[in-house]
Image 1 (tube, helix red, strand yellow):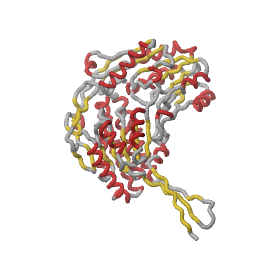
Image 2 (cartoon, rainbow, N blue to C red):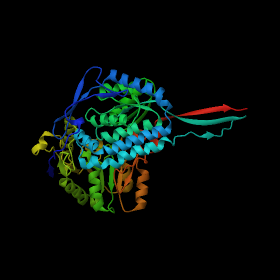
Image 3 (tube, rainbow, N blue to C red):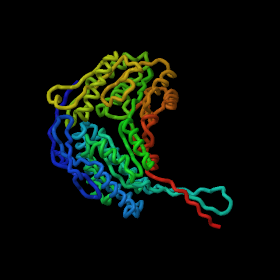
Image 4 (tube, rainbow, N blue to C red):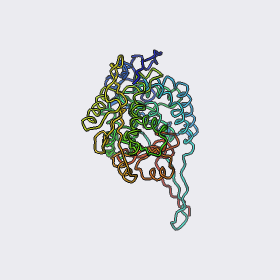
Length: 498
């Protein structure tokens, strides 16, 4: 395992140790309580910023601002104008993309090589939603009632949206929530993760620069159990869009019962990634490895259950382990870094706890298996890329979401048995398979119970293609036309003309 070091760069003002306020009704304000919390670089432990800590009172203020905007001036803004605002924001995100990617790297640890690669995706999402703005329409429906009765439908914005995002990709997660809200004419209160709030706050600044009116986009940093819970249960929020763990997702569903608000959930996963003996192994080795090791395994759809056909199991898993050993671990500010730190000490404890569990259960660590403490990395939350062999389906490392750079390699023989085992999980977010046989690819893809199936690739995503889960991985979709529909109500209108 190679270890990289940081290369000094000029710090953005959002990460220079200063204090950052929250955005409510177009104004930067302190928390009503006056509380603040710190956000740190997970690679070094250094203080990046002190941030206003929102709670229920701040959520109340932000929701009230969003409601005023929704029922006031924003309701009169035409689709073309909303489209133009999104295009202006897209231009600003593109212009400032290097600093935004740096903020993601500093605040949650992902290597610059990864965060900078999201330029097309980030800008593309906003421009896609801008295109959808003028494509929202109802339909005329010929009914079968007697007489002359004209019937049609209207598509209307659902209202005030409470958006709650995780820390594993703040830039794209923020745009994934506010983009469709603006496109459809909704207003939004965004609660970023307390571990990584800085990019969301900077995007809020750019939204104001783009001319998005006060109250349309509000950003309230804070903790999940206070600010997040208040947003999820708020009686004047019409919809909650949440990305995060299934446990928190369940609590949001319970909280939504008060006013039966709409809910869309993109939750966790324990995704199968299947390698058949007829696959192009030279492509499958790095593909299967980075399906988990990318972003230090902090991806909800990571292919953490690696199913490998028995005849190639030892060879293939060994090659994946060797690939993992050669990855460069280090501070994300070094452009040569491939694996950065985990986001926090709490996440480090969770992942290393599973490393201990795996070995106690009888799995063999062919690569990694512990925390990285070499040199300057001892100050950060680093775990080496880990490959467990000899994993059985009933082991905890094969059933529970670890959210770290940990592969559980499982052997299989029979395809029917494989599909049953691959689907034997409470989750259903992503899945992958590697084969040269197109008939086999179609057959297995149809039978996998997951929202996405990647064949001879992994984690491919596009703003036009829907993404979401089955089972405990949530419901609703993000990206694609389906995402826009999540922010709209359908109204039927009947007019008796004679």
